[in-house]
Image 1 (cartoon, rainbow, N blue to C red):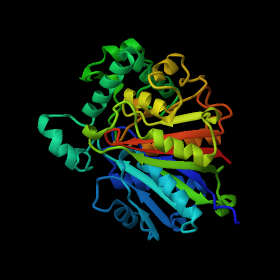
Image 2: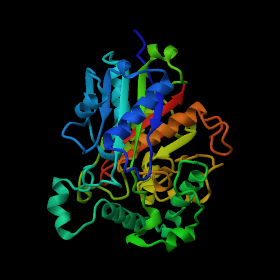
Image 3: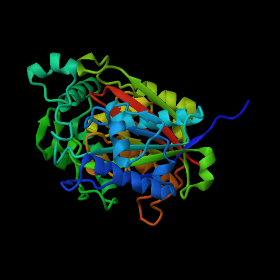
Image 4: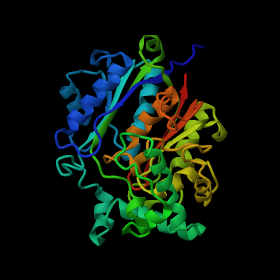
Length: 385
């Protein structure tokens, strides 16, 4: 039996992040795509598959293909919120394994901060939410996460101070990232002193609100000898969904990560103790606590204890969100593509010359995206080839 066709990330790049009135959704994607391909030593003519997600067009992949001047034979515009790009990586790997494509370009771009209406992100409600939640004045998505946080704190006796450790750890990583806008240290007391936004979530429990874009290039194994970077292999992936509207979430303290994470790790043939690096969606501090537990890195109710020991901070045993994450680096509406970019750079050893930032000896990374109202998840296991 012939061995399966392997796939790897061979190029990554982001566009400007922050506030970018001089850039459009399309130009964010184009600049990131051009840079990611150039890094890999490839060009737009090598791309035979295009993956993107967003609400800025009736057909994002077709619109982007025209803008880039390419005509790929494989398109994927699957949109499952912030987990879309981890799903795209999995879909690209499956298409490569099947022999359908050779080089996939995955992109995202957003101008939600400078042009929330034109970017198509102002109304994040869906049909279910419009019927059963919006009429009662529920501010989404934060109210959904606040509801889950309130239930979690009550069920396990965890405090808001313990939850704040997520933001403190993220800021410690951001301090090492020269592109992060928020690099000044914060303490648990700073998080607790920040304004209440939606109880029990305070301002510093919430992700940033920025513009930005990114791109990831995935290539088949037979292309690896010809790329200019060290390939980062896609070892396993899994997608899952539990609900759409927060009112339909089966258990407010357990996410679909319990399924997508297990699927990805089984496919990769790895256990939790083999993972050197975590890149986990951190739209809110509660998102991280729920995800760590649902993925199985600790028991229910114990994620706060894990964080309290500095396990995920710089120098910790399980580094997490090493660019500062959505809480302190950037969050242009859908953060998942930045998780992939950071994991790739860490596994390649790109930060070797930046004291403290490079995770020493990192060979395996788990990347996890969360979308919607804790609704969808996608998990990818990456390994240094």
